[in-house]
Image 1: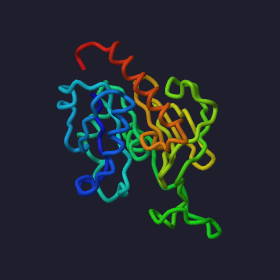
Image 2: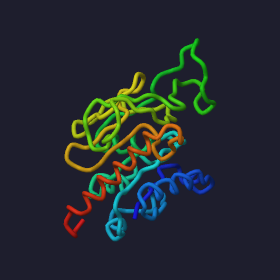
Image 3: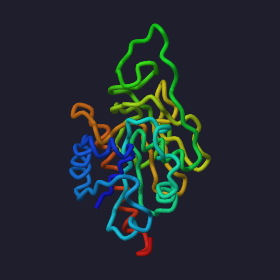
Image 4: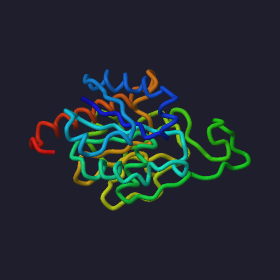
Length: 226
């Protein structure tokens, strides 16, 4: 079973159901049922009782300053102490990186001559749509991919400085850290949205298939105690 943790602010999580499509995609790719819960609903002790293969951390549309996701001690403990394979998408990628000691921030202000791509954050430069991402470090997450992939992006924040325990795997012209992995744990972050990959751009689906393959392999190797 896959756990899909929603990193959004609580009221937005309860009122919006755009996560349902991502859940269906995760089930189709992993060929396992996907349990959807909010990050406040699953302390580490609960997770350890569930028959899980992996944890996926969602993206989020609410600014981090407007709710407690970066300061939530139970969520931080889950990420840092759980032995299960984990992957973060977009905002989830940033949260995982932050918990390990990385710094975050907006990409940059939009220049006067640059077009507004979305009303989401019109004053900021954003990556919004399908963008090329360059692989800079060989890893099983990108098995079968070329040196460059094209993936769905929807963000204006980014990882500014990666923590020492994390390894950069991919980059793009305007975003330095497009993917990372932990040096010793099966924990990954991707700034893009593989769970929302357009059919005509299947690289994100391949990345997810690779992650679930990594997770299943880790599950067979781990001891019964987690």
